[in-house]
Length: 339
Length: 222
Image 1: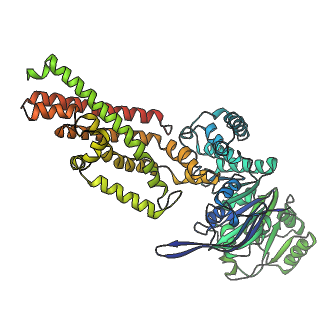
Image 2 (image 1 turned 90 degrees about the horizontal axis):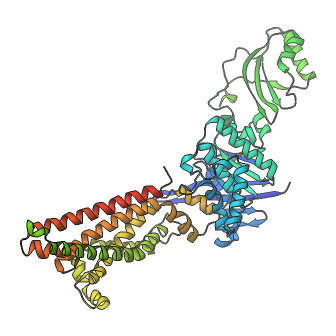
Image 3 (image 1 turned 45 degrees about the horizontal axis):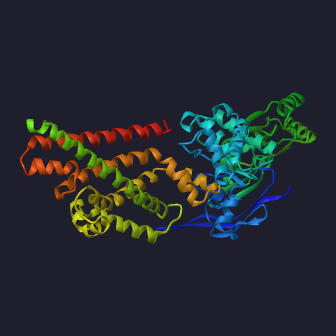
């Protein structure tokens, strides 16, 4: 897959009266054509600034951004406006024009790029149909729910046939059900229209639901970057663990040292591993901690098991795990895993 | 009191009302032609605006402030050479339009500025992200999105100008103000003065109500 967006050594410093604020430092990443790329971080980490550096709503302090082979730094304002038309963007607060109907909101980007009124309307109607709001074309934003407003915003962002859709906390103002529907819609657009998607969020469940790869931003830098399933199974950085187990410290007062950690990396998804193990070894285990989830139809996550007292039963269980190629390791004592 | 309600006086009121309306409408119109672009300029060149030019913003803002701090009655006298140069006289309703514009245009630029600043920054950012040029943002986002507020501002400006025309009556500005001064003040015909004041009050009410009606009629936010 070719790279659609490439960011090299990007830095962004905001100059304020009370001194310089470093928003981003040495960011390097490339986003491939056709993928759904997530950027996650706590608020204030710099992720919203990063997405604005991609379409140059924010000027970089240092580094370069390439979009579709063009280096954006070298473009004039006018050329930049043309490039921006190839990038759709949606926002947390939807940012619809309040005095325009849903249809006229979608025709807006077409109007400013000089498409005739009739053609714009035709295109806008077909896009409202894609987002499932064809029947609300003449409604004004104030008459629409949050989810419907975001659908209109999505239709609007698609009007100029963008190559990429930038989503800045697009579901953060929505309830969980609506969030799911909007993410499904974004995934559908990615799949069916082949549009690359960049998702900015502070919620791991958004990443989990639709992203292929993720970059974790912490204190202005990329803390971790990789496939979503990989990061969910083996989070390396503190921030990744914090995001994956929100508020969930791993219990650190297990009795004894006979604990193992089983890692599900999605290979053995449909088999009830623990149940089979208990049945076949006829030995009970105590599940001390479990965090598994469904990512793209595969089960990933971890489980901490307290093994039985009997040495023999333990050996039997470990042998069974090895035989069945289940990924496990001894759980260390102490607080190393608990941050 | 009776003298205020003679057929002759009704003719005087009617003519005065027409003169006042003439001054108010023409000067509001001209003031908007000048004040609206200045208001847009003030918003756009602001340091957080779409095309920041701090020095221009500061100098235009300074001139506007100076114009606004001169009391209308003094401005009336101050600009009389200009008035004479443009209209050939300094009395009568047409002559009064000149100082009215001098006073109202800076005021209107601030009213417009305030309305445009109500437009959500997020919406402007969205338009920028779609590749809109500054001019497109002005004509397709800032002005249409603040239309209800601009209409209310226009009612406010018109009413302020009505007040100024009455003041101009003291120096022969024509319209209802002149009638109130000539009959009521100089000839102690209190009844006539009261009638003209009532007409002015009704005029102010009418413009305010019209403004409120049009503003809510065009507002799609509710």
